[in-house]
Image 1 (cartoon, rainbow, N blue to C red):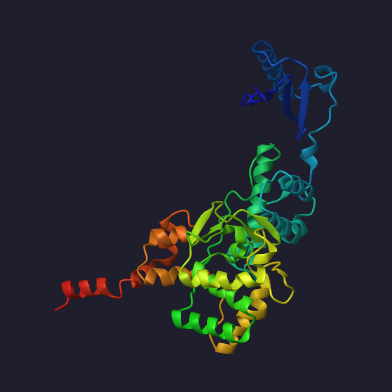
Image 2 (cartoon, one colour):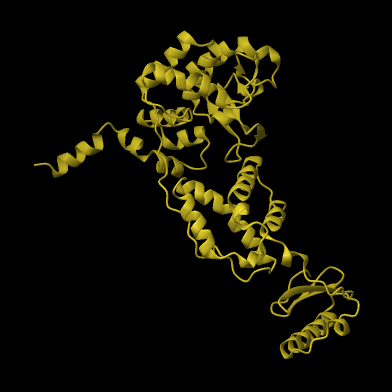
Length: 378
């Protein structure tokens, strides 16, 4: 039940049978009040065979064939791009941040170009022209992200049989260079932390020392709570994140326990004076200016991290590099990659090898290269 009969236009439902056909360039649906038994389904298929034949001969009479029908075209047939895009958004179950990106792409890129034109009138050449124009101003990655909702809209239109072919069928994703990790070295890391210790509120120093020493994503660290700390095992549980002011699961939708070094335990003991008495459900790290939880991870970067880099003459990098610094420092120190992957919350060590392969190579301090020199050297 509920499955279409390919090529017949007949769709058995729970307590009735629905038929679908095209006539004079329009898509029609009619619901027949028949129980979807085998006999009724076969009878309906014979009816539709006759309907298709009469349409081909140009003698089809709608009212005599479906006397109780509305003779109205499928409402979606005339839905323009803007209207149908809104319907597509209503079918999604995604994170708020993802929905925001899709809405932005539709409102700022595609709707201004297509308005409420019929979907079938939109040509591949138009989409290619928009992509070519945007490529002059934005990255290939941004363009690919913009195209994701457009593909989804036309894929749903295909499923609804509003179009016969998607105009994006032969439009390939843009090539773009992925940004490699750009970590700080040990000397830079210690200079940054020393500068913060000497010039900023203790809580700022605590935040960044914990970031460098645990490899937690900023979106995870901002919502970690005192109840997540296991003082006996010296670990902290990571099971939530905050992105664009909305709490959600971690990026990989997994819970992990991060082992803490004595230095990280010392950070927590210092931070207890600032937020522990707020209760176990309190975020560990608090904004020292407002004495309230950090709303997002932007203020720390703008007010403290980037000014510290400028003051120290260290090349500017995003604060997310604290996570990469943790990974590369551990790898070059000879820590097992599988263990590091678990600490970072990667699904497998394969991702670690993909992103940090050159630091894994550096971890042997040239021993493997020396072996090759011995083998092939004169």
